[in-house]
Image (tube, rainbow, N blue to C red):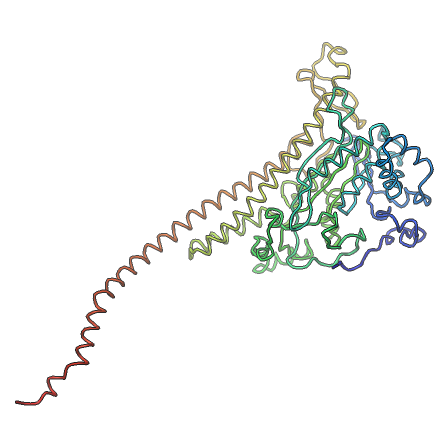
Length: 547
């Protein structure tokens, strides 16, 4: 089986005593602490005039996991017996405990209440895995969940969700966009059955034509094995995403990113592109982001291995989320913002040569060809560009639908919690608005007239939106990008119509010329034949004998 170059070095960033590859006990596990990125979301008082702000702090997973975590403790057997009575499920949970039980050491020990709490406390812990194997989701859910009474039910719902949302194609497995609560109980009035939940959203990313560049380091030793029995979700091109049952290898070179190369005629742009991207972005692919929210304090994300890209500028998803998107949103939705806004200017104002600019530049070149020499080949190029824009618009609409589903889940949870809390109106009958301490230890503004809490983003450094609701920011940015893409598609439709009209006009002119030549041929060709025939069969009068 073909395999990527073996560059897997899990102990590069850990102390020499924590070489997991040399430990036989760790070597039998699919994941080790060196393969996970752990970040804590904390309240920090960096600016007195602004108050406490949410900041993200990177933690070393190897320092959080003790040396003996590779050995399964005897207490785990009691946990398995309390979780279920089914023998088959017990066997499965035992296997998950053996492979992923050590991840329980990554749970938060101290919850941060105020900005002045110790550095070992946090509001939320975010763990990222650069591998996309569905079995890792089940392992993380089993290891990090502390609700023994419902973890077995959550595992069953997870299996059903994975089975229903998995799509098979000629280019590998993938998930359909979805957001689902992993609880069999319907949403009740207490709001306690909304965790855990799983979100899968596709996002667009750039790549290069041809073989993928060698990885700087390989996170998972199982990545790169191409087998029909593998459960890995691999990255697909934009054409493979849409034509999932067809072979699109011969059409990959016709992508807009492959045809539109503005750096080839602009030296300054060439230098900027090489400095920013490191390589020429000549392809567009579709990746997936999985977000598993165990509870309000623990979030696990999964994405593909893209270590051949630079960390800064942040083109790896993990660094894109932690270094850029979190500063723009400052809440639990930074993972979604980092994925769906990977190539969009509204999410990342500093992005050079964003996706909308690539399509707009290619359409400008096609419009120039339209005025110079309209042809049927130009019509085919416009139709190919229109097809790609339709695919990108469909992906963006799927992203919006998934985010709206997630927002409805969040609003249902907030409404359920607010219904249980005593109304501020009864406490302060003379005031319309009041303030109270929110879940993050900050202040929230309560509007008693509309009976809802205005959940504000504490700080927006790079966000182009003026909205205060972080989810509304995310939707607003995405809708503005969608409007730009639809305008480009409408412009493509108009260019196709104009090109066809000009080609038809030229064909009419050609038809008139052909008609003239046809008439001339019909009249003069027989005359030419007759003259030639008689010229060959009659003697010249000058050669006739005199009588």
